[in-house]
Image 1 (tube, one colour):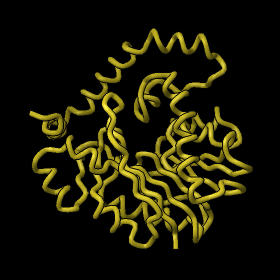
Image 2: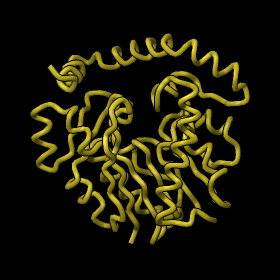
Image 3: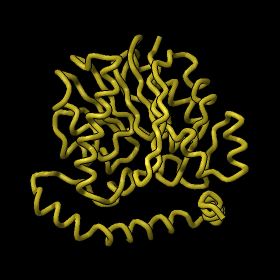
Length: 266
């Protein structure tokens, strides 16, 4: 039995949250020594509470920080093919506990940064610990507190991966609303590389070009998963110009990479 079938059984039995909580406790013990060492060696680094780290990334303090630096530079390198990243308004949609956005002011030029997330504790921590960035709480409902055509760049790192098809459509419309004409939207998605994680029935849906959703848990939570075939994404972005679709090559030992979609509002 593959892991996809096991996951779906746990969802049906309504015990996936409990299993995920047990995994959190395991990770806390697993990284305890390494995390204590990082705190000792890098006392200046402000770290979110453990569960916020676990829910949004993984419970490894060093990776949260150092991978955050690397991922922020990776994001900038991708965006710079299509934008100057100078004097712009940039939104981190689904910012979580600030893993990426905390590093971006240092590697861009005179940009204003905004972070939005549905997790009250994440936004509270960011507001208290990451000065100079505008943070706001949103809900699962597709409503952002920005006027039309307000933002130059929006990026969402593994956000659509935790939403239903209905919320894909609603949130894309909202992101399109607040993005300026000519503005850039950068999205990651669980594309063809993730097909190996699907059950046979899910693969049939995926290969037909339809979104695969594993729900029966709180939408937006790390345990809620969506998988994105190319045909579905092109339909989602039909009102925009797709500048790039990148399917990174999977490298053994580094996890499964997500697809990158870079689109422009026209």
